[in-house]
Length: 198
Image (tube, rainbow, N blue to C red; front, top):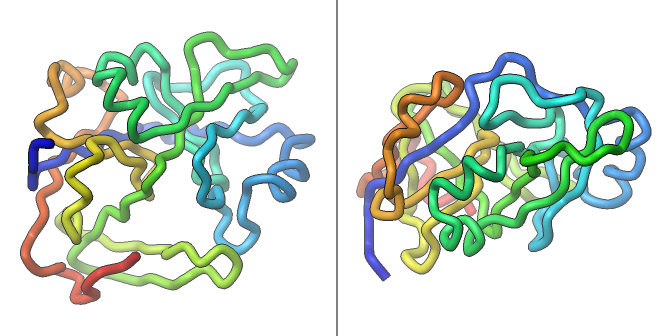
């Protein structure tokens, strides 16, 4: 497997996230949503959800507010390399308010979720319910420590995906007006002074 210290973080720039359908929230708390940090509990299967909107705004990516669930058009994910996506992400079905499947939209979560680190205004805590690290920082973004070389695609803690640079075949993604794309490098020392957060 190719080793890389350069990754791309791809996330939506939307200011119009989706919302869980009202009847979905109770099921989510029972099934996959942590009440302590309001994000999905770790798992290795896709999550099917129903949203209030008839279609997510600002494609090709969006997210569901208050859940940690990222949304993406399947055709967009496939353009990044289907094999790599299938290796690192688990996809679920997305339904609108009438329980009708929203064509080409899926939910995603990673087999591994990486924290996008920063250099200033840093805060973090460990969720007392599920144990996940909840992190916030501003400044220059990076990854630390270096992710496993055997995986090329990860979920980020910012509702996006992180993909190893050598797997990105087509950087036309930088022409998508609703996406933010950051280069993430792996420094020798974490700029936030926190060391490894796992």
